[in-house]
View 1 (tube, rainbow, N blue to C red):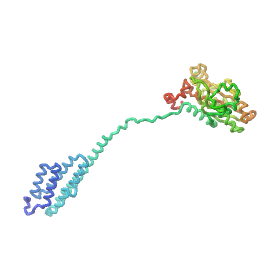
View 2: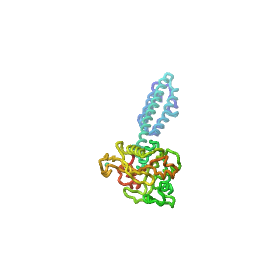
View 3: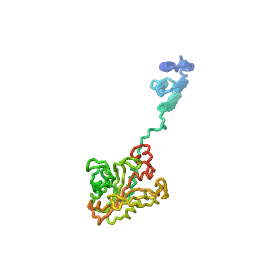
Length: 394
Ligand SMILES: [Zn+2]
């Protein structure tokens, strides 16, 4: 059992035991092979084979390292070779049994083995970690290009769009916006508007009655009457009154039991018909184009005197005549007039000192003209295909 060149030095017993341990472990793990067997033989043949022993351990370790397929295997391998009970540690311990002059070279070899193995294990760890990440990414793959479910976004109703545009226009002219109740008193809806209980003008504005005194308002003139009463006798008054109104009408393409008005009222000293005309011309041009002109036609409303229907030159044909204007070149857009002296008097104003004008714009009428809508019922039947058409005011 002695080496050929140093017959006097017996092989230390713990080196033999260590070597047997490594080989047993190799056998258990199935990594023992012819080389390790030969290695063992050489080892027993003499301790001068120790350098080769280092090389063989390295080759075995690297070979097993290459076969590692998981981080768990790698950790096991690391403990087996670099751990306190591993072969490298045993080699270090065996160093004291070597002749003094051989120890430095042997120690360097063992250290180099230890470092090489540690580096190789770390390299392998990097490779295995990357492999595991890639495998996990493959398993957890999500197709982020798949289109999600979009929430259903609503858009503003065309009547609201028109109403807001009219409001913005008048606010720019210094008007304020006033609102009032849709269930209104007969008093403000009719009597204050110069339509007494027995007056035939009520027939044109029959409505839905809650009881003898309360009804669904037929026009937003009722709001104007409340404003006049509230502010009397203060002037000037410049308000617009938007809101839903109701009539007992049979629904057809141009009539609805419910529609939307934006009415305006101006009261002050020296307010004249020319002020009304200037205001409405400005509004018509802003809403239908700068080249529009307007014309007044005599009309009748119980709460204005004189009263007019206001036409605007057709925005489709410029006044030449087309289907939109029914060949006339003019489109009726609203009714207006100078506030009736009776209305001013009932609200507490002196018609000899103050005067005013009022007008009423139908939001449906404006929206139908601007959007080319042929049936007023579309506004109220809530067909989503119709409503989705109006994403902006053009
Ligand atoms: Zn036309």
